[in-house]
Image (cartoon, rainbow, N blue to C red; front, side, top):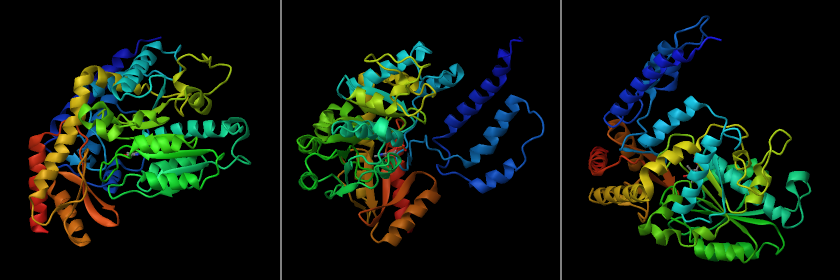
Length: 462
Ligand SMILES: *Cc1c(COP(=O)(O)O)cnc(C)c1O
């Protein structure tokens, strides 16, 4: 057979050149995309080409076609949703993962990448000070992490009342009660929907969006003693950045045999920072935890992390147990027993590279740097006439109001048109807001002051 390996050379160097050019431009180009999907679709055309094209030429075409429609999400002045940037080591590792093209589902099939993912998992538990016996699964994002953790929870709470959901499904099963805070992320509801658990019971939150422990206690009191129950808490509210009072909430829930899951898609990383310790007191006493690596840790998409203390429950919920997959019962477990996918890319490897590069000090500084930048922006915009910072800035999120809904929307439009910075328009507690979410490792003081100036310009003209 011919050795075709040299056929990779040109398209890979072409891609590397385009990648470098993109990365060089990302902090200086206008942050928003310059065109819309339809316009690019027209340029792509409807027809599948009838014959072959040179691979490097395809890469040139790809870059030229997509680029005007890309958002500079890697910019230090991109504060939309919660997106995160990409650390250099993580990006380069991600390229290698693609080149290696390993199916990372099984330990014996690819010991190289599984060992790296397992090391990354241990480092995360250590950095976030979560129970070291937990299973760590690498999934596509926090949505699937919420799904995976809640699947383990569903298995366990039903098993504890004598029902085997793996064997007998949900039809005829005792009803599983799920309690969530009023300001949980919508993907918690989505995960519950995937799991057949229906709509959760909503527990009141306080002004910062934290679950109220008295309301949680009351909601638990209304549930019969022996009913299988799950409570979902949150580390990092999308609007305020607030953290639920874990120590009190977990202790109330555990006193009623309730599994406690924590959605910490971007907030779980606060546990890495000694200066944020007060926010996460009691976090480690929960039963499962969701986080993303593609947000705060700044690895490329898509990479989420599912952490479950009860590894038997996780493997019962996620594992594929069939003759050709040799499970090593009670041992470290195969990757496919900790994630919904059987086959997947080695997405934990960029996490290893990020943590190997940062070390503990770098990881702490990454988190502290984001918080510092958020506070800097909040302090800067407070000086602008007619701006109100609506939340206590305890973490990476800042919510702004410019008075009326119309004015806030107009300032948002002007800010985005200006192109210097990108922030999300949103609604919080029924009020229109402009939300700043700092999640990129490159955001520095200069980005902060340029962004504050951009808000000032937008507010002055609106
Ligand atoms: C982003 C986010 C999610 C969903 O995460 P994906 O990675 O987009 O699947 C869930 N919960 C919270 C709190 C989030 O911020």
